Amino acid sequence: MKKLTEALKQMLDALAFAHAGEHLSMRDKTQVLAQSSDAVNVEALKELEPASVSASSNTRRVALYLGSELPAEVIEYVIETCSSLKHELTVLTFQSGNVAKALINPYQQALEAVGVDMELVTLTGDPVSGLGRYLRKHPEVAFLACKDSGYLGRSFLKGTNPQNAIPVPVVVVTTTGEGTAGLDKDASSSNKDKASVA
Image 1 (tube, helix red, strand yellow):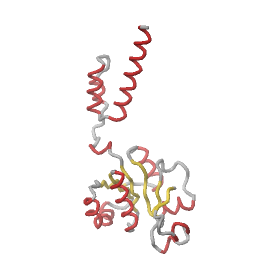
Image 2 (cartoon, helix red, strand yellow; image 1 turned 135 degrees about the horizontal axis):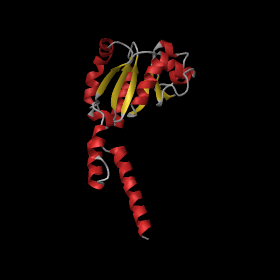
Image 3 (spheres, rainbow, N blue to C red; image 1 turned 180 degrees about the vertical axis):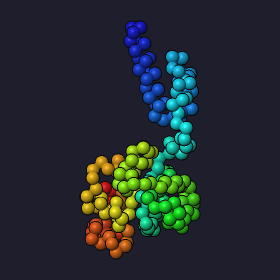
Image 4 (tube, one colour; image 1 turned 180 degrees about the horizontal axis):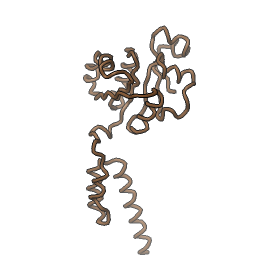
């Protein structure tokens, strides 16, 4: 009976540690481990804490792929979605920082009005592999949004994008531009469906 009780205690401790590992900050994890076990080297755990972890890294985020233009339909969809899901926004671009800021600035007040924090990240290299690398390293990103008339959106709508290249769901937002007519006839003809998930 004593062995069973000890085994149950170990299992419950393991569940508590698993919960702490998934849901708590590094500081809180350290406190939990320090209170529960003197066999754990708490100082060694502190050394494992990444130096550049921001306070918002635990916050769920929506990623927006920003090309050379930012249609109003796309940013409105992203702002509304971030607001309703209580997610923050990460704008991913291969444009220069100044170009990206110029495209986003007209919508800055709308983001602030609904309390959505925005982070701009400039990437380099091939767009698909660069996006994939970034998204694999940032599990806080719930999904990636892009416009239907850009390279990435067209790739997903035509089914030519390699599987597994983008490790998160992709939402292709339909815009009212002329270039969308031949890409997704159902989405273009129906104003009710503004976004499709690839």
